[in-house]
Length: 428
Image (cartoon, rainbow, N blue to C red; front, side, top):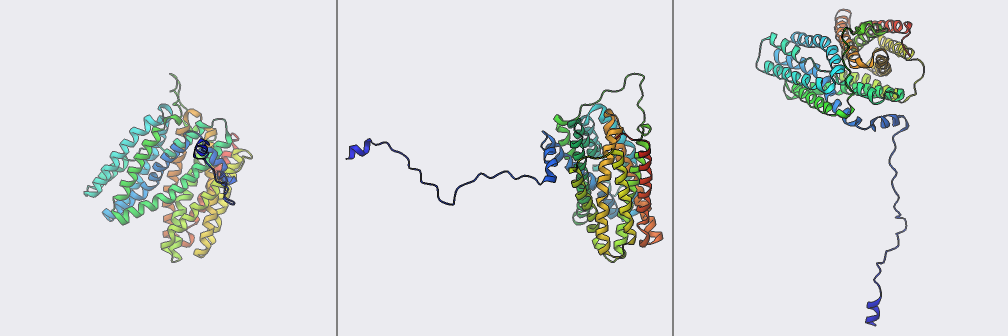
């Protein structure tokens, strides 16, 4: 009997599957339908890596203005000096921005971005040391000028999307929408983060953090060489580059972005003044965030919609919607009425910016794309500064009840410039 049992093969007995415990393969979760184009966009090889790197630097860029103003204002107890130092940085950026964009087109993103961010790091370090050790005011102006020449990461990421999808208009449209949402997120989070660091840690903490993030993000972005657009060769001997302002349709487009920047700058000042008049000064940040949230929501939806109609027509429609959406703010008589109106006004912003940047792609030669986008950003930046100054004057001299007169006027000017672009039969 023992020999018989020993001669039988040993077979491992598999227990029957338990009832009700049958394992099913989990299906991968799918993105909502309206987010699917963004999923396909970020699935492009190398796209997610350069997007995350650029986001780090762009968040830092949104921190710099507030960080510099608060640092100087707290350390020197002078908002006038802080504003003048900040204005110096804006003026230098207006000059160096398009020049750096042209160099990026000619020599490549990494070859220009890396040495530029190194110069920025030296200028920012000098600014922190001068403020900390009580250097003369003229030294602060020099440091502000020295730390203002950094290539636009937003322009360089948009150039990468254009190079990755040269023949896919729908993908470029989605990419433009995605980039606008990233801009809004950065300009919601960046100033708030800088304010917390400067006021809750120490005055120089905001600039130190912003500088570290900008250097890190720029170096990581430059290291992603696989997705970098190839540089364009210089012009042949005897050829001269036509100024971008003389490109058909470009002058009117720059005027539109200049006025649109004035809308943004004056809107922020007008909102702070109006909220204070309603007795809710502490809610200014939250109310301004509603405007950015409206722009984010509209940008996500707009990027998932199919392209219809001529590009110039869509641009004029967006600017017109922005001009109309600002008008009800004049009638806001309480915080409860103002908040949803700002959200709606923000929703008109993203489609305008997205279509405007797409228009730059059409108007500017591929060999000057970075220069073109940087020039447009510079016009927007100048408009923001001018609009903030004009909005502050209006709030001081005409009262908070008339504070939104400035953004309404700027939006009307933007619409006039956009109609000029349309009449000149901008490429569709």
